[in-house]
Image (cartoon, rainbow, N blue to C red; front, side, top):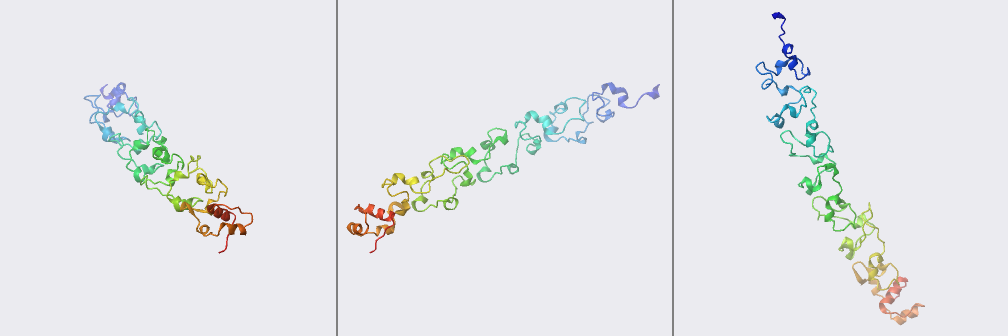
Length: 290
């Protein structure tokens, strides 16, 4: 019954259909009558939802690299992670959009816009190698605070806390700036301007603080310099000046009346050496006329 013979491929080759009808019945779109197994020149992958380019188009890449079996060609996912999960060194931490960083020419990342992350690179951070801050390929594990990377450069040894950015900037570690007069309750004058921070800040800063609290009087730092052994209280600034510890207030040096004259004017004041007398007079707010 010659006229009843089917003219469609599937009529005779249904048993040869390894795709289990998942690709329809138009076998001739891919297969040739000269060689059923050879599809070269007959199938154009660009007609699918996934165009093969660059690394994907190499002859060394076989169909089975993406298609797990012959019956799942249409159901093969087109997301990168579906084939490259084994290549994901980030352990899923960076999501499934591999193409955001990787290209199809080479899996190696050629360029990445760090400004799209939570930590935009500025100053000396721009030319720094990734491994300088990212110790592993789990990139999101990298801390964003300065101290995590710059701990070895902390000359203050935690005396001024871990918020390095409050004084330093990314242009250069040595370009620091801190206005003690405006940002603290203790303006620096005289010799205080040139002293190192750790001269006063000697205790580690509490967690969450930029510095440990200091007393507001001179004796907080100058107790060892108090030759009066505390007899004149803690207000050293009434006699001493910040320019130089041994230099006294100008108005004190003008008190030059003889000791016996002062003793006759101030009842109960003992006869003491000149320097101590001047301190005693100032502390008790007593002055002399010429």
